[in-house]
Length: 252
Image (cartoon, rainbow, N blue to C red):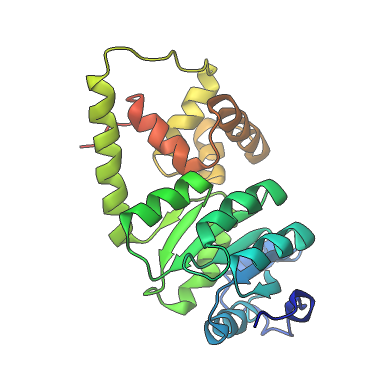
């Protein structure tokens, strides 16, 4: 039986000052709103464990919990979270199906698949659906707060064991592109957008790209948004795949 979403929506409980955050994080937290997180998993004990860990962080607020993909979409539309931590294998609606719908209901939300599935198909489908991260539940639960911060800051995260599979797929995409006899002309990107795309493909976050190009972080965000719109992509991960296919990033 599914729980009432309103009953699960909750403000974060009092947290230890500075728990799990660096001095820079705490300084930033004084002038910025906390990162609003929605947790979706069909195992209540796992949800509770994540909530307890995240509530210890001054700069993170758990705003709700859901038990399946259907609830995830409804709650994301109502609560507009910054980050969604979501399982793939769930009743009524899978995490991948929910991911696509959440990107429509709350476009700014960053979605991290937190799952036991190490299937390549799930990884690729999650990325195509718009997921920003794919982490296996084998990671230490204490690493989750930093993952939330990283994704919220513009980075894409993949568990190391899954990243190797993704690199293999990138290489395969690049090889197939060489075998094409006809190609549809790629949308025209500006020189600056091409620079940003190459740095995104190297795994740099918005702040790192801003430092590299001597521009503001907001300008980087605007460039990334324009790139995704022009290329009709949904995530930075898909932008990396595109960069490999168009030989903007070498995979050895």
